Length: 203
DNA sequence: AACTTGGGCAACCGCGTTCAC
DNA sequence: GGTGAACGCGGTTGCCCAAGT
Image 1 (cartoon, protein in one colour):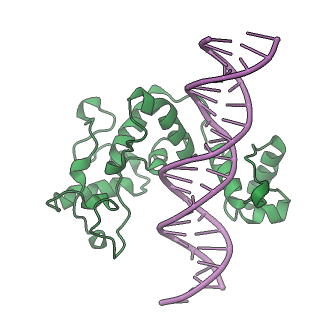
Image 2 (tube, helix red, strand yellow; image 1 turned 90 degrees about the vertical axis):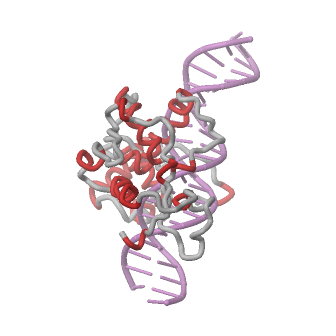
Image 3 (cartoon, chains in turn blue, yellow, red; image 1 turned 180 degrees about the vertical axis):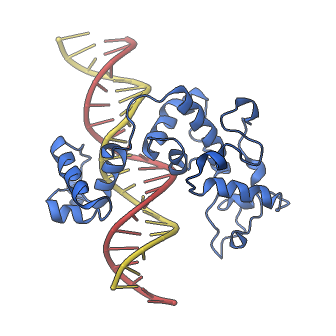
């Protein structure tokens, strides 16, 4: 990226921001790799996308996280693990990068989470590839020894995790009984119970 | 005042997935 | 179906700056 050995982390300046914003105004988001060609901006597509998504987009909320956001992120992290984009998708105005940074710098410390002991166990896995299904380490969904704990329950988890605009109805009333806005119904331990022998193809 | 340390966060990297041809 | 480009994600790095010595 950007000239190999000449690479050095470089902050965006206001002129670059303006070029990028003008481009997006004119062409919309996407086609990030064309920006350098069309505008002469010396940034790769990935860098442009990141800058837009994390900073320039009007949807991005700046400033401190509120108590409610704190609380929501903690709950979502407990539910989803380090799935930052999914978590950010449920925290209006916040990006995955913001959420991730905020977790690593504020919340993990606040909660006394050991960064080394990553909360991998509660990360729902992507649909397993055909050859790696029985590796518990690489596929936490297979973690439960007896396998098939509660497919219906996990199906609801998957529905929650999948992008779905109807946030209120799906998230607030997860059928494992957890209301993310109700502290009394929240479990503090990771959802390891939910690792089931899940058949993605059947969904 | 000069230097060191550590926190906060923007930005990059590597890799997996999706899309277009 | 194969291949390359584009995109998206999570992890990591490194810059900036305030606080401490």
